[in-house]
Amino acid sequence: MPRITGLAAAFAALLASPVLAQPKEITVAYFLEWPLPFEAAKLDGTFEKELGLKVNWRAFDTGVAMSAAAAAGDVQFLISQGVPPFITATSAGQDLKAVDVAVSYSENDNCVVRKDLEITKDNVQELEGKKVGVPLGTAAHYGFLKQLEHFKIDVSKLQVVDLTPPDAAAAIAQGNIDVFCGWGGSLARAKEYGNVLLSAEEKEAAGIRVFDVISTPGGFAAENPDLVAKFLKVVNDQNAAYAADPEKFVPMLSKDSGLDEAVTKDQLAGFTLPTLEEKLSDKWLGGGVQTYLKGVADFFVASGNIPSALDSYDGVVDASYLEAASKL
Image (cartoon, rainbow, N blue to C red):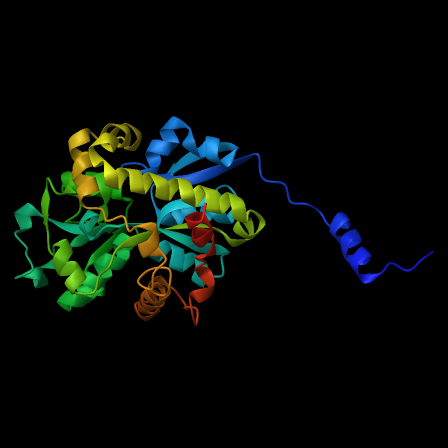
């Protein structure tokens, strides 16, 4: 039998290796009451058309639950996963990659104190002993802890209850908790019964940034790079279309998010959607996100919320798929 030469051997190996077929369907995790432009493409079938497969949509209450679903192989894309749940998962070794920045929203994530308590930033020490409803391990939890750090209040002096934003909004309305921490439509409802301690501008001045990522299991992305790039292109095309004509999107986003149009407009007004070019810059995926992830992770270790942090978060951020999307 003749010996196979180098080139022929390489070709034979290629033929023998399994070809990974594109999946026939995917499931995308997202949030209700969180209107983002991609939902227009969700409604009109653009995702299916551009990706060439069936897209299932599954709503979640928290980014922590999204991580669990991704670990179980139940979802392939996590849209608007908060930084803290992403950090908690990746610090524990879960194979998740941040491939895009979904939205920045200091205005749409906050803590609200019941009006009748008459507690403001000027007498904030009176929070001690009060009951707080907050979804643990989320962006809201991080923001809550950072606000306490800003005010020099020991978290152990408050009663902290793990509640999803909808449950916490109902609890503050019923007077069962004193402080609500959360986002979206739940935050809007909570504001009917309370007041924020720090405005978005004051939070950012205190170094409390709030943004979400689009994440995906690393193995899935590595096996389907073209699919990931196409998915991100649809998302960013919708963001660009929204920036050009915001009013056109309000009815669609209201319908899909489950909010009335007035609340939808208010929510959107509190969102910042960086452009694709901005997201590829040093401020975001070019280095800023990685540095911020490390800072949040170290803070969570110091505050006892996660056991350990990675030495670097460079390995859990991959801008290559967004780079590819920018060229499609």
